[in-house]
Length: 404
Image (cartoon, rainbow, N blue to C red; front, side, top):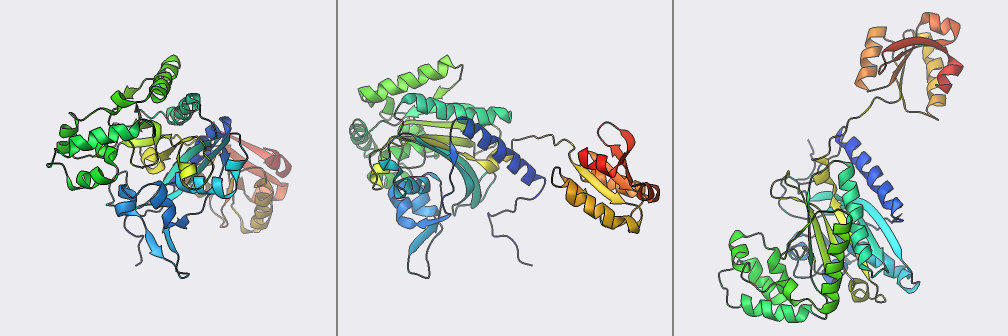
């Protein structure tokens, strides 16, 4: 028997109901914030991610599904969403139009890593990206958008924020951090590698021994330039004025190299080790770095599988179940089913069954109405209906059925 690859799972009912419910609600909220849908391809040139995500990141260094295709192109399945949206933004010359462009997307991402709870090799994200707005109010709006989605599904979390600085202040901080790291030889091998590639990534190390060492390291927030400090202070002020609780995490640098200034994560206490359910920040230099015109940008992504583990949805009865107790009525029922499906959800049973069997099947399909054509109903052109939610029974004509 052929099975799904390790770390790649089917999304079947009832989990698929949760998935669609989440996508529909998250999309609706994003649209209320004037974000529009975009769908970049799953497959991109490998150099897009090497240049954007960064050679020093674990994604590029260890996790990409990378291969040479039949045309000799070095390609990979997308490991994250932002780079593809930025590539599309530049390729379609939106960077030259000016103004603000806001997009949301959802779909599969791929990373070759050890599968565990909350972490798969094929996983799904919902994300938003905003281009052309430099105001820190946009950072706050992006955070509030993510918060609104999580709040709708009653997910508990802690919001952590930080500032990673900008090209004006980050180089000096990196020098101070490298000087500190060069005196520490008992850090892990990954941190030794990052020390010479992108040193601030060491702050994101999950090794407890490393974290104890970094508690004495120079603090990023102590070395922000005036502009970064002003924006970070303003972000805190906005969040407090809106009643949003947050903590400042000085080691929060995110796992990707393109972030500048604002960085944030929503962290759940219900998921074990893989506890970040959403995260993002500002990446003002990425559009220019990938060949576009300088464009401020900010966004976030939500890990959908991690969200689904936390969502409890009460699926109400909906739609119609249509069945017959005599074979002669099946063509009539089939015609009625086709008409009714133009306005409502309907399941039809193609075999004649007893009333008890039909009611049992209607309950299994979670239908609101069980509609049955027996011999008397067939002769009179009517249907027997039971409202399975309100527990009432009645007869209606075929015309009334189509209007119900």
